Image 1 (cartoon, each protein chain N blue to C red):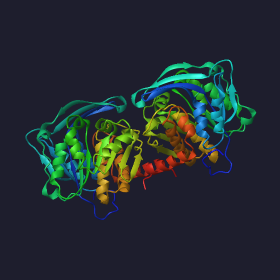
Image 2 (image 1 turned 45 degrees about the vertical axis):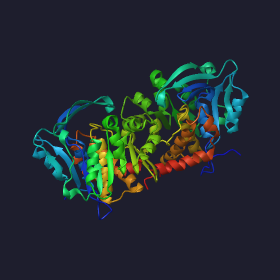
Image 3 (image 1 turned 30 degrees about the horizontal axis):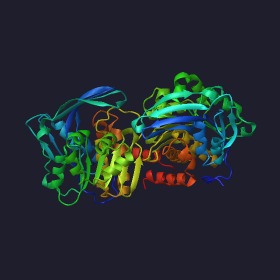
Length: 313
Length: 313
């Protein structure tokens, strides 16, 4: 029986997770590692798997062996939507973090089978009530929403690239997003507003009922019609590889919401605690290693610590 | 009757505040102002005056007119320890903030009467139970402590200059400090530890029972033997002049502690809320203007807002 964090709801809402699956080569001040299982869909799905069974959508290439598929299966991730394209290798990314991890450079990027990827949802995914759109092209994110009937709760992430070259498509997408998640520098870039509070308000005016601006080690701020919420990050002392931190945050956050089948202000606040604590585990090792192996009790322990960290009583 | 925030203690502990008194010329992206009443002792005393009657220690020169003294008197600040040196003008500082306020340059500094300043305490100050040592030379800070009998609660602040040129004197001082307050870049400089959590632990090992590392708009972290506490900053949207933010934080913090006559973990956490909210008022106008005029209800309103901002329920 897989370890999952017990929801307080008897009926969780089904969750679909869409994004890239990749092999990464990562260079850090503490060493480097090659052929790491990565990509937003992997981190998001692993993180969400501590709360619910995520339905994964992505594409893998002819170099994606069964041992990698097994890692996803071992966390009970639903793989019907994981397409295998034998015409080429999996999406590849190589990056280097600089001293103190405050900057990273992309050294190489090969889209490979990801170039032709269309996130078509299997029939069995169409009743999903929660959607996590990883930071892929806004038109692909939109394609996912176009397939889903009803009115699911949609969390979308993005990256600076789409702000720079696909701003209009991104703005169209944001209108249909329930919870838009973005980091602080991207929020400033998208809104042209350096003050983070004003930037968050601007983003919410673009359509989403809620916006989260992530500030890395400084935590995150939630903007919601019911109020603001500022959450410090879990205090990490063993930073090894920040890759996937944002995806782990998003995956755990929406996994928690889906498992509780709730989307109100209070539920999003509570889910952010799970998001930051899950992400704090991810960054303590290369790739998904620590995230995969940590276990639900490790996340719950950190959530308890974080609650004490922010308690004024 | 002066507006003060009501303490829950009937017997507050007397507080002495020591630091520079200055005239500042400040240039910001929003404009500039000359001849601003400034200096750590001014900001600290104004901030503390919302909670208790601070006993001020500092030096003013022959250009410090009665209208400035009146501003201090109007907030019921005890001025017996404010020395007047007719031999020259008051300490002068001119600084410029760059776009987004993320960097500032000192354009001019004239020590004037501050050069010969010795912080000698009047007899009537010697029963002080709380001490705020502004960021003056560590040997002057030490001189203050040498005059005080008993075992007062000592909050000390510093600046990068003393870390660079008076490291040993600063380390000697820190041993005698109860609550050491420092910003994040200075904490890294002093400990040579880039991870803020590890840096805070290292600082606490130097002697103080508690350490606060300030992160500006990202809030502050308290390191205490009873635990950690992370507090986001009050969300400021009208930043006009950050000068004195740290001094206002420290002044309000120790003012609140003194008024409650408490120094335990829980009391320091609560006082940090008052510190960040008082500082948030300071930065919304040039110099001490907004700090002086805000009134106790404005601080209490922001503390209520901040409590909601960090509440997970």
